[in-house]
Image 1 (spheres, rainbow, N blue to C red):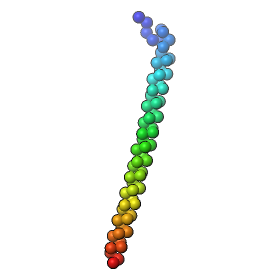
Image 2 (cartoon, one colour; image 1 turned 120 degrees about the vertical axis):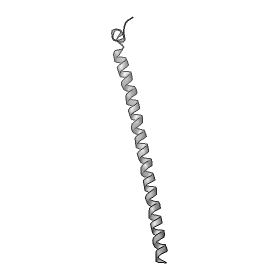
Image 3 (cartoon, one colour; image 1 turned 180 degrees about the horizontal axis):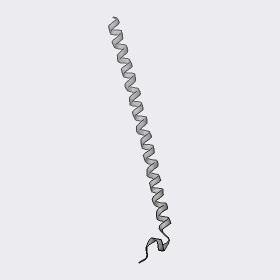
Length: 63
């Protein structure tokens, strides 16, 4: 029984593992960007709600 180094498959295994690792890394990078965008959207929405509440409170106090 010969090992993969003797068969010349070592390079193929390393390249395959590298490609899979890079694909995983790219997937995680995209996922992080998506989560950040979602959090920013939630933050912006919360800010808009807070601004509306402050305006309503101010208007109620002026009446």
